[in-house]
Image 1 (cartoon, rainbow, N blue to C red):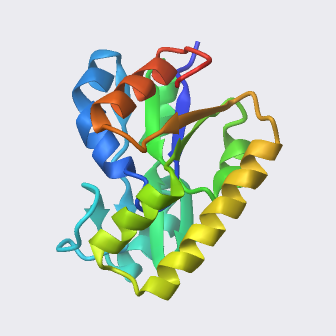
Image 2 (image 1 turned 120 degrees about the vertical axis):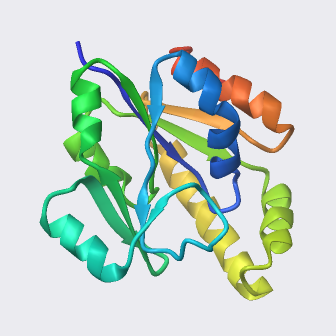
Length: 189
């Protein structure tokens, strides 16, 4: 029996990177691997511990079939190393920091994917995005509107493979919710 692909999605600023960092040890204790993404972002950029590559390097890796999944969003390219297929085949659970926009393609390749949607109260998310200082206020408001529309569409589907995790409060509580989902509990609240 193979492992499970666990696909974490959520809006920018929802705390995916912080959650994965905080949950790294308890996930490893459960035999769940967290994938290190390949991203065309400067190594100096703040964010997840990803492998940074140039656009040309990314294109070459993609052409060589180095990625199980890859997508382009927000001016960057993202790749999930193909080693995840070996880990899954060996029975290991694999957690991926995924893309909401790439979810349909992921479901085609991995029909039994478990999707974790990290949600955040809009007011809290607005505060986080403003505090980061990466975008003008108008872009933040547009992003918040897109996030709300995406969440509505996802929730309308009544997807049995979808688990919601609220990250509006303390990170420790969100880690508990994540671990409950990984442990297979149907309700992660």
